[in-house]
Image 1 (cartoon, rainbow, N blue to C red):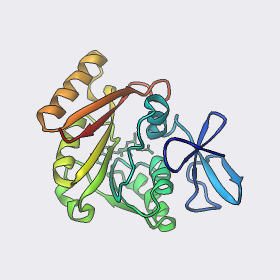
Image 2 (image 1 turned 180 degrees about the horizontal axis):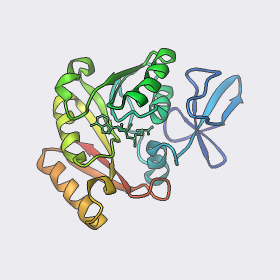
Image 3 (image 1 turned 135 degrees about the vertical axis):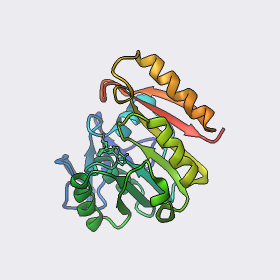
Image 4 (image 1 turned 120 degrees about the horizontal axis):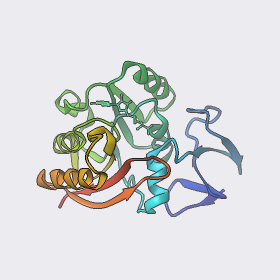
Length: 219
Ligand SMILES: C[S@@+](CC[C@H](N)C(=O)[O-])C[C@H]1O[C@@H](n2cnc3c(N)ncnc32)[C@H](O)[C@@H]1O
């Protein structure tokens, strides 16, 4: 297993791995590899947009130095579990509105002390902002219509002074009809009007079709 430029992420051949915080347990049927007395879980870029983003954009680790993460749209915990591997000492507050997916997150949290799932609608950050405190990273992957607005509301309510954001924008959830470029330009303009800077935009194909990652900071 070789180290990569991203702290906590390893590579074997073309595959990415994270070191399993919960040895002996898989989260989504991922391959597990033992190496040098440690266990590593394969991080599938077709299942996790964060892994796809690393491979496509080769950015500085978006989670670098984060002590607290707000994760919007945790689903069954695929990406959450890898962030949990990467940030053993941080707190990951995970918002999910589907009770079925939330049950998976609860099971994950029983085994991983750094994961705190909350059953809530990410459109209502006032319901959970006290549990989040100040988040150093706000990660959003909710695949719904008003993704830019939803991001801004959570950014305003929950960010720390040094926060970064990563918005995994699903273009086809915003509209089925308008051209992709126009949807992305509109989302970017809405974010910038809302007071954040969009530092980069990465197309996540072929891993996630119709998705772009927007890297966000304070202006
Ligand atoms: C594409 S999936 C997320 C996949 C996940 N981020 C991963 O990589 O493992 C989108 C999730 O967002 C959730 N979601 C959609 N709208 C939401 C909202 N307003 N509040 C909270 N969760 C929401 C859905 O229930 C679904 O589980």
